[in-house]
Length: 387
Image 1: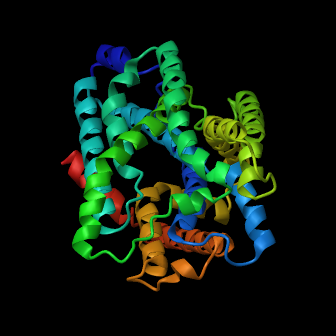
Image 2 (image 1 turned 180 degrees about the horizontal axis):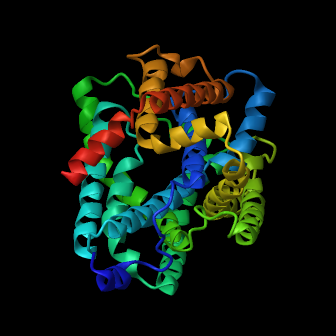
């Protein structure tokens, strides 16, 4: 290996070869639960059906802890993984140019995976935006820290504005943001359904990229410091980050949560707008804070591994396969050409389905680990990207 080339291209904090750190995988495993909670209610038509009080409580908690928190956490971990992959490739003797090409190939294939996901399953995809984000952010892997933080802050403003404006109308009208964003297909034929998805997909992809870039950039910054790979060393910083970001997130999400639960009735248009903008803006910090909490949770796992942590890590290592598995389960249960439960379950029922699906994913991932199976989507992406 050319030592001078390695030292000139590796980002600050490049690690020496070591065993796989548990914290990033633990965070990805929990992330899939947050994604399941965020997505499942979008498959039902009447989120208010079922037990009223339970639905209201869940609507409040979803705004506080789930909505617009899962996406930035996923984005943060994706940016973190870009640096991890870069470091591994540099340790193996590859130069910056070849690693950059590899990361871009992975980005293009993620875009392709996302496109197939939208056409075959649901118009609710996070793979394609991350593929585009990888293409855009590969060059930032060698950017200065100050550049990363400034860019994340600048892009965060339009990102929060896009989500906030989409939330504004339903909140001001006292309707559910889930109902407004429902993806349950109507009575259109298959050709009309596919054509509608094809027409909408580019616009959704553009919006999705703007929404994930801030988290990806912060993840790159954090990975340079190995925040999740060295939680014992970074414990003080992780505590500060988790406490500060979680407090900001909770405070900023309370107004929207009260409106969503129907406990703040008849808000003015201005109040609804402010609440709609605050919730995704502070939710971005909450997603990053949750990743920091997972870093702290990894400390006892490092000292004494246990069966649950091992299963969570297995799930995190196969996060793409099990994310796609969620879509398969939700389509089979909720869509009219499946069991058609979209009219029978409200928010509480959808949350229960999300929990059960995630628990099943946890079992499947652990079984894959036991038999030494990496995960079908991960295997396919690796073969395509590494040629």
